[in-house]
Length: 347
Image 1 (tube, rainbow, N blue to C red):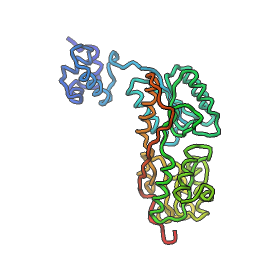
Image 2: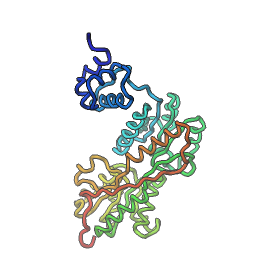
Image 3: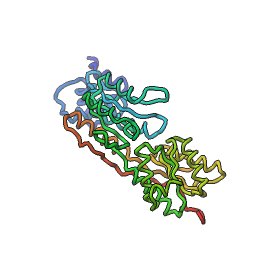
């Protein structure tokens, strides 16, 4: 007799022996699972299916999991590595629970957040996760989120707490992140330290500025000469660093890794060196940071923990268990690499 359909589908790319070895079961058991036969424990069946996934092979059609529903993920852009990092973890987590993620990305000249949400609702999404959206902009109208809730669509907001919005929030401790960065530079002997951060209307930027001021032992007004609010981009970091260098800063704390790369470029444009003359600290921690020149010291966002919390909160909502309308705050981590060093005498 020839192989059964399910078995042939799997054997088209993987041998039964490969799957059996990965799942730590017999080839006979693998064959029974692939052909939909009874007599296999649920846990064993799941191990075989997981082995197929790990080996990178498609499951037989009859064994593919039906989607539990669509979940929208709205992010501001893909050029900043932190957003794809969040999207990847969130989408993988949603898929693991049987949901199909639908990514909505705002592009210059493209769809706005409101338009993306409308498109997602029209597609029948069960819920939405917003990452660094308009909820983080204190000048934006929060009523859009009340309207979404009124349409029966649960949602979770990541990065940027807004007390005017009734929803679960997931945030890194931006205040603590700035304190960590400043204390690190202080311990290295830097006395004139500046902050390059995003526009003041955004909650994360405002919190970083407050933490920066606290760590320096001054109020926000006193610290303002060494705070540059600019764009969360390489170009923004470059411009802000230029102004901070004019103030004589030898240590620069940045609101994102992209800004930090711009700051490094600005320092070198003055004929100075990083970190020998000027130390630079980023924020986010891309997987590429160990390979920049120099490797970037940064404050790492706990992406996996935050993404898992956002997904779990949304799943609770979808399951009919309302999650507390509050902010769940996660602690960042200082990662010291090569862009910071002991201040030179008089620095």
